[in-house]
Image (cartoon, rainbow, N blue to C red; front, side):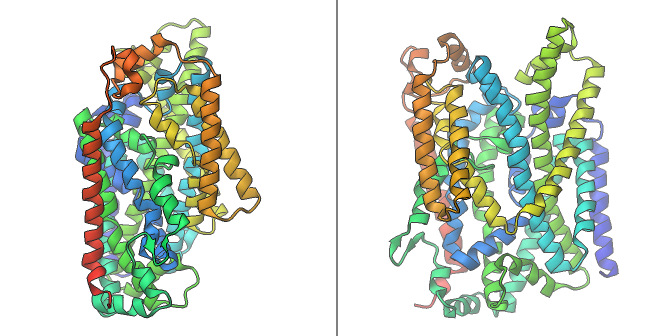
Length: 564
């Protein structure tokens, strides 16, 4: 590293410290720490969402997909645009209207009794620990590969230092600190990705020459193909991607019906309009702006490093080729930014479940048993009641515990990092564990008969069936998804009809609070609710525009240079 590189690092560090100093006194209670006081404008919410999905692991994952399965292999995640746009059009405003603080708390307003209580706690635990730690583990893995392959720095010391900075940022500034640094870090990350792509393409002799060189490789024309249809037609795996995965499988950031940190940002938006605009902007940035620099770099890596065994390492090796005074510092800051934006969100998001869905309900019951007035009433803020009395002492205790929860998640994630060898392996495991649960999350907004046992059984059978298939070394991703989805769907539908209905009084309160559309709620709206064709047309039009834009990007960078 030269003097200019050190200056770049110092400027970056000072910028982060300035943001923390500016926001240090913004968090008075947990609603501020985890939801930003519900005052996020749409553009900050959108930038934060897209920055969270842009980690140091993502360019490596895309480069690995391109090398192994070609450009069309990205339909593994491109298909989620259907689900993302559905969240924007059908569900975003309903989530904001619900007034909950986490998607796990939704169980309390949609269902009732002990099943709702158990579901809320289980989902909070499941998302905060196993799911969240798996994600953080592969994000750490991506950063470690970059540090080792691109910079030749000692891996664990750098990871630990970065996590210390992240812990300080997240513990001190809460969601506002996460969101504002996300916005800065997204632009830095994209700048670095574009510079890497430009360098890599120029190194191969320009776009036309890059495409020509890839076409000469074994199966080269298949690598360059955009369409999910191969020469033999639609393969089973790509058929699962296009027609099943996006609605059937739960995955953080692309949940059917919305969920996770996406819903956290929606709930933090200052209005329903801001919530919807943020989701639409996020989807266009996520699927259209981000992937092409990574895809071009992945193609260049095939030409520049044809003997490379670990295809995910191609991206950081290009960075290593670019090393020079000033550029090393800039690209390192770009990747550190991408890494930090993802990890900071997951630390704050995971801690929100532990505090708002596990600690607060437990503390409320404890106070009620002891007949302690005042502080116990503060728990009602979890449903958005801003007028509930909260003592200053209790706020301090909750804020302190929130910060400890953040610290614990960061430490746990470093341990989980040791489990995985490749980023794609961890990603597909998470997809399979959520297979079959998607229909429940969609229908709970549109069919009153769904109850808490529907969700509980879906989670249980999805986990059980995918775990059994993994234990028996069932290697086909497509068949695993199909089998798990069928088993899970049959199980939760059966459970739905053999378990008690949610009381009509409770369902009426839910309907009055969120006002969902569709014939599934006709009995609660005097038969006035019809299928929302207007929303369906909006969703369809946005999907057509998005995928057309994605194809236009392929034609601009790749398609027009493919030799006939």
